[in-house]
Length: 258
Image (tube, rainbow, N blue to C red; front, side, top):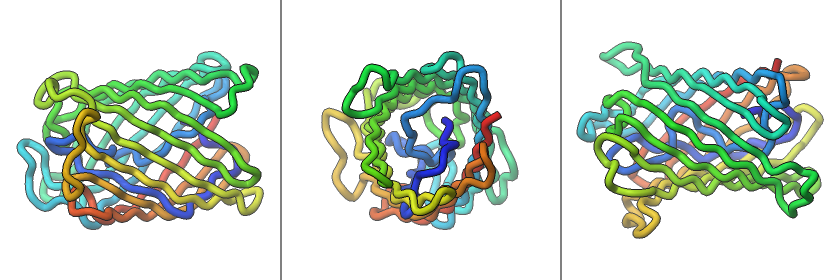
C-alpha cells in the first residue's frame, strides 16, 4: 500500500492480536489501509517492523507464544493501472529461544473506484491470500477481504477497514468468516507530519461474536512523517484493552515509492 503523501496523523493506532485458534488482527503488518493505490508503472516498497513487549505466554495448539517476538515484513507493490495494484510479501520473525524464521508468503491484488465516478467516499478493495507456517498461525492458508472506505474533512481523514478473514485450508477452514475491523483517524499538522489514532479489533465469527473477554480491541498512538518526497516513516505504540491477543506493541513502517 502506498501512503506516500503528507498527511496521515498517527495520534494513536490500534494494535495486533495474536494468531491463534480464533482469527485475529495481523501481528506482522499492523496497518489501516488508505484509499490510494500505487501509481501505474511505479513500485512501492514498505518495510514493517513490529516488536511485542507483552503478548501471549503459552502456546495455542501449534502456534508459539508471541511475547517478545520481533516481526519484519517486506511488502513490494506494483501499480498495474491507474486504479489497480498487485503486492507480494515476505514475512519474517525472530522468537526468543528459536531464532529467526520465515513466517510465510502473501499475495494481494487491490482495485480502487476512480475518483472520476464522484462517489461521496473514496473506496478500494483488497483481497489477500497468505501461506503461514504452523508456528505462527494454525491455518496453512488464509484469505482476507478488506474494503477500504475513506473520507477527508479539511485536515482530518477517516479510513475504515471492515475486514473479513478466514482459514481456507488447515485447522479452522470450516469455521467461516471472522470480523476484524480497523479504523484510522488522522490529522495533518504540517506539510510533513500527520498524527493519528488507529483501532484494530477481532470480535469473532460474523454470525456470532465471541464473549467480550475473548475479543481483541487495541489502539495505537503515533505519527506519519514525510522523510523525503517519496519516503514516509510511520511509528506507533499500541495497547490491547482486553486479555485476548497482544497487550503492548511497538510498530514502525518505512515506505518508499520509486
